[in-house]
Amino acid sequence: MRQSRREEQLRDKEKSSTLKFFVDVQGKTKLETNLLSASLLPHYNTFEARALRVVVSDLSPQFPPAPDRTATTEADVLQSDPENSTVEDNLYVDQEGTPLAFGKDPATDKGPKVAVTAEIELGLDRIVELIQEAHDSDDGTADIVPTEKGVTLSANGVDPDPDAVESGGGFITLTEDDLYTMLEDLPESEQPLDAQIISNNGDGTILSKLIYNTVTTLYVGEKVMIEMPTWFFPSGAGPYSEGGKFSTHGEPNPTATFRFAEPIFIDKQQNFRVEIDIPDADVLKDLQRIYGPLFIWVVLDGYMTRGVQ
Image (tube, rainbow, N blue to C red; front, side):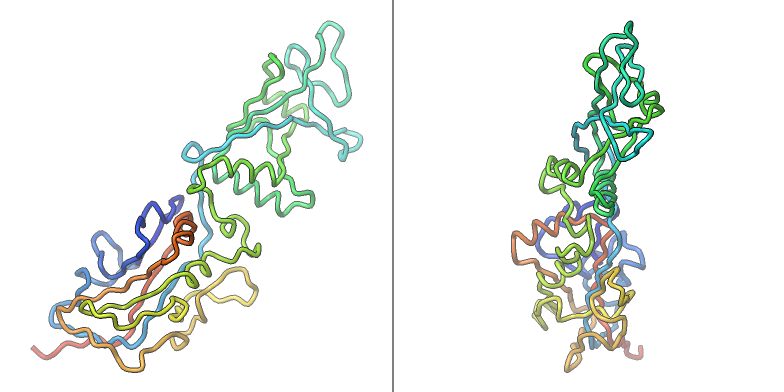
């Protein structure tokens, strides 16, 4: 099994365009492999491979928090009219940093009012969370409070108190476009794929990107036994939903998978492996941006035999 763990990208684990299976068993759990030796069966055992399956997980990605990956933007601090919440305006403070009620001017001895602005630095996990919130909202925006970690307030030389500004009804509104602009400030290799930010957005799924853009090959003793696009090898396993909330590579039925017309024999002490190759460089660049947890299993299904000793 190949994997990228939570908050990691596939490129952190896989630098090559070829994913190799059954060749690395050190430090792996029983969930990841049941081989004891790399590319070899246990002593004196032979194996009749009758089916080959490729299983890809469809788990929700987890993105790294600040300070690992951060981006910044600036925005005005707003407040709503207490008599009409649909009316908004900049939040102002007097020269002592005290927030003013909506539409009010400071006392004559407090000097002119000053609008409060915010410099915002957010981690990738929080940016994606706000994008999803804005995407689901009616007006395409998401609000954050002035006291949120990563928010720094300023007001033309005046130092506003974040707690006082929040108590005075202050809030910061970011549009979906604002948040995507923050993402674009990150290096392209660290930006998550659209399919991992908003699912079912017409950009496909991570599963489809893997299945339809890769080639799977079974080697036995360095001989190619079969080489086909990965969609040729349905998983025959995993959750299944007609509601479209998640995706699977085929129906979760062991018979709903590819079966060899004739068994492929793997003799004792004979090397074997499976490789999933990503031929297109642009596709590879995209797939390496995938954030985990992501698990890819290759299953050889058949009969293990051992002669009488």
